[in-house]
Amino acid sequence: MTYPIQDFSGKTVLVTGATSGIGKACAEAFLKAGASVIATGRREALLKELADAYAGKVTTLVLDITDKAAVEAAFTKLSPDVLVNNAGLALGLERADAAALEDWETMVDTNIKGVLYATRTLLPNMVARGMGHIINIGSIAGSYAYPGGNVYGATKAFIKQFSLNLRADLVGTPIRVTNIEPGMVETDFSAVRFKGDTEKAGSVYAGANALTAEDIAQAVFWSASLPAHVNINRIEVMPVSQASAALNVARK
Image (cartoon, rainbow, N blue to C red; front, side):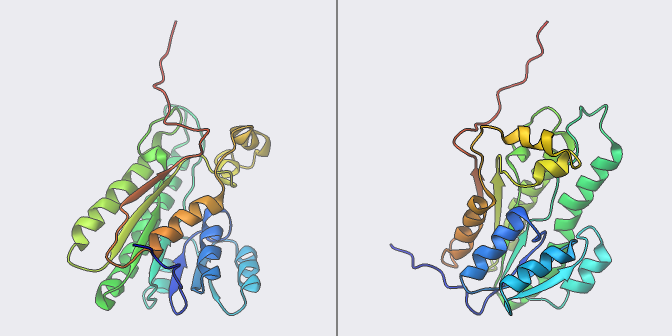
């Protein structure tokens, strides 16, 4: 069977964390296919740039995904066909005994609670309408541990299991759920992790031929473009230059 290229005209896609990186690339992929996009994020100027580039096709919502009341107020009356839970971050790479508890809390609030707030607010409308697709941006860190990945990896493991449990709950409805699990993607991810240290962030990708935000956006778009009876549970994506990490062994 040959699938036609999906036309998203008349459909609405909500993307959290759409100001840059994977979120922005996802928004643009759907916009180019004719969709209307609701783009959320904290940086108003960057949301405006996206809206100006696709005049009349982008609705912007300036909000912090960790603010439950703000998410509920903004999302309750929305009925997107696709929700891309992209907003997330990593902070620090210190060993667990040296990591900042505040960084752990921020990762939990953003990577877990933010996804819960958006999903729980929008899901009832999807079920009532009999249509919808929730696409979560997870990480290979949810499957493969690495030194310094402690709470970040744990939050992405939560997203992986939450996605599978949503599928279990939603069997019997037409709602689809997908978890996209990227490996190394060259965006501002590491600059955020290292709190603005661009030199340190750049060293992460040096010579690695990492994935791009657009690579991940294509996986997101493909998952959403398949026929309504097809659910992609999870996609793990790495650059050719990366493989699952070897076990860390301390030697004398």
